[in-house]
Image (cartoon, rainbow, N blue to C red; front, side, top):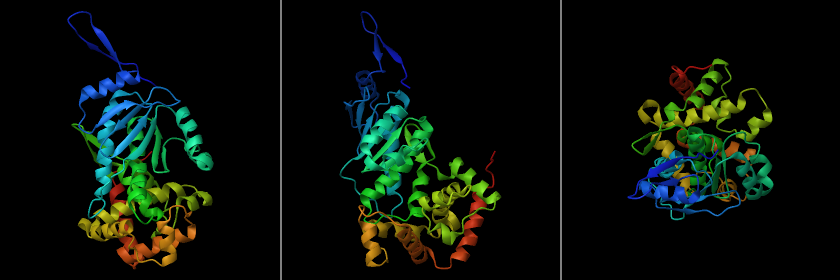
Length: 335
């Protein structure tokens, strides 16, 4: 949907109207706002309609969305996400080449772009009911409302960040678990912060899993990938995988006043630098993004990393983990 808004600009003669339902009008509007995170804004010539190219310090955003509130906030949001991704590491990394983000105003544009951009993988992505994806070093999203759109960009932005900077790919539980830390956010005075403890969607899903006694055992969770869960087609299994992975990353960062935070950050830092204690075959697969990940690789590496960095007594850790899960969902209401 394109919002038709106007703002009156008074002159000494007749008043003129600044239209921001056009690319030119929106460019002028954003420039006049003097947004701290905005480096530049110009036209994006594309086949879908009026478009903008927005530059921040670390992002190049191509968009057909002409919604003023979201566009005013988007530069600051993406830069806050970049800082948040870096905060997962003991030492920050430097991004020299800007990340690309495509944000479309409507689903039809997103579908058409995806069919061209994703090639043979397009049928997989176009099955997404509402959301975004990361592919070929770009995040691709469409407007599903401010809160959900920013949530999707925060999530997929992590996949983009670690795919660019990490020498090794992450096992599924860790990759998805960290991504979900960037789904809930708040804004104050133009500054964004991420609040994983307010991710009500994941918390509600986790509580339902606990109530139904459908928790995936920890030893299985760290070896699974979403594809396996989808193939199994078990009721609530996909929701359980994601909500439990989200809770597991939070557990490693927060429980016991952060007693495992150093180990967690070391695991990520060694993935960043290519220093995991895995065999040469698994290292080669982890480092080469052109090699398709297998269930076997995910199982072997997921379990190996957890035991090496977090601890081998998985049953004992699981007791703490489940207790933590019950604690963080205690006050969550579900329908």
